[in-house]
Length: 207
Image 1 (cartoon, one colour):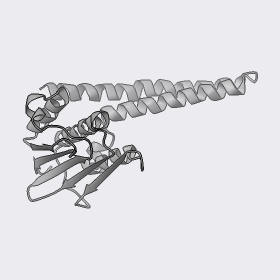
Image 2 (cartoon, rainbow, N blue to C red; image 1 turned 120 degrees about the vertical axis):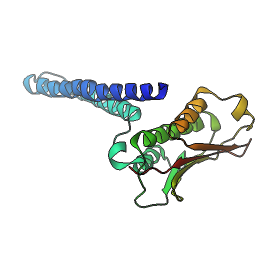
Image 3 (cartoon, rainbow, N blue to C red; image 1 turned 90 degrees about the vertical axis):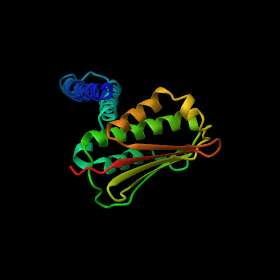
Image 4 (cartoon, rainbow, N blue to C red; image 1 turned 90 degrees about the horizontal axis):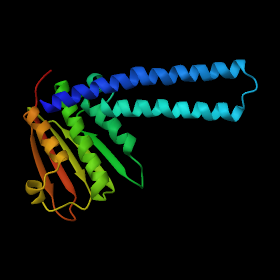
């Protein structure tokens, strides 16, 4: 499917970024240090600025590759990955993100399903930040019998629910396409001035 092709391409690009571009920056940093040792007349401020630029490049490569393929998802699971995602964006008093899971050791879903759920939360978060004028997002994970339920709620301006049917953008269609991949159910609740509430229910499959 198109989503499978997209994820495979993201994995490839993330690996290339991390391995090749990250390796180039690391090698370059070592060479800059070597130049500083053998050339005493290099201005200290230039060495410092050069090192800072390389460090910024390394951080950018790491951030982009992590956005393309969240690190630790396969090892630590969706819950820990979502918690880290929220912690990174949480800015008290400016924009707040909260995550809650009702289980200390939540059951695992198939890796592809966990990745699809993570992408859905990414897309919903991006839409909220871009369009909703929200101050906070709350994400929660519950585990009723034989299912996992992921809830996304923001306190933004909301919109007319009629638009859900007549004006679905690419992002919303992508979210629903991902849900179909794991046979999940999505419920959208919104209204002007009432924010957005999205509930994703996933059949629980042991892995």
